[in-house]
Image (cartoon, rainbow, N blue to C red; front, side):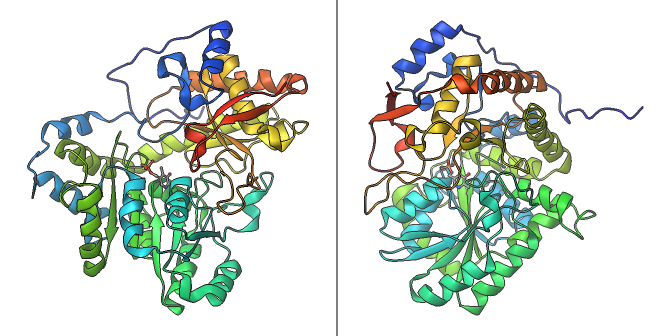
Length: 458
Ligand SMILES: *Cc1c(COP(=O)(O)O)cnc(C)c1O
């Protein structure tokens, strides 16, 4: 008999989590304005809100914490990260930042100005926020296949070459760079192929533009390339990573994802001139250029995390767990974005609750139901996240209305995953009885999903 698959780690430290009753949860979710961000974490049994900064560090990362150099300038911890970035990602220069959006803030302060257009593949919400905050526009050039959740395409994060070239022709002067998100979070943790990355780089060269990778899940992207792209089966993850980044001039990184740390980020680049320009903003917003908002110990853990995050065995354990959840849901007939992404399973709320109008926020309604059912916290990736149009102030309804179940790295067992799957099945079985959605009570002018408060439609 073939041996079953098992995790490439064992558990050395545990943290208790608490179950609750449906009655308790009814009260807690109401008190939090039907916004899952508003819940205290001890009111959550299984927390799939995000995979960002929620991973479990390894024994090696924890030992690196003890070796952190807390010198203000020139700390050895800075050089540890610098050499990990040079070796694994191939960039000469880097600036530490406290997280991914801080990297965007610093970099875009140099590169983005009012009226600019930044083409990319379904820009992440903070990326879009930092673009729109500067009165520039994010132009989505993702392939159309990404927006049909029933369609199985190996690289749904890909950029459409025709869409990209059209915008380069029509708006060339206003385009400071092209941004490629690997993997593409907003379209469901979907990877971008090497072939596509090379195409983007070629077009960028043709029109004299630089390419920025939004790289939070670059290693998961490399894993999918190894599994799915012709000619890459025998290459190591690290070889693929270097080949991917060879197509980029700059990268921004939320280290809270594939570098498996609880806080951290950076910008890396080939251009010394860009490094010099960005250093000014880094010092203003983040801190001196050798720590940029991070402690020495956190930089150490980040460097170690980059090595661990690019190991095949780690990635296989991680991505197979996400796939396991996806498969269980599919076996129950629950509509999910296919194929299953790298860090999360995305439930198609439009197909789950087709009888609810989009104005009643289907995905948010579903996320609230899941919390009530089993104390599981997912997150809406739909109309609330999409915000209002900055000009018309009308609600934007994106092509996909999803509930994301993001799996923290090295945190939950497959027993937890089974609880999530069965809880959703129970809701799916009684989906017809969910007749009322939610309405907005209060909201912020930008990135409203974090703090929005809602109420049941009566
Ligand atoms: C998480 C993320 C960011 C922002 O990073 P933070 O560390 O949360 O500030 C940017 N882009 C992508 C693709 C991300 O997943």
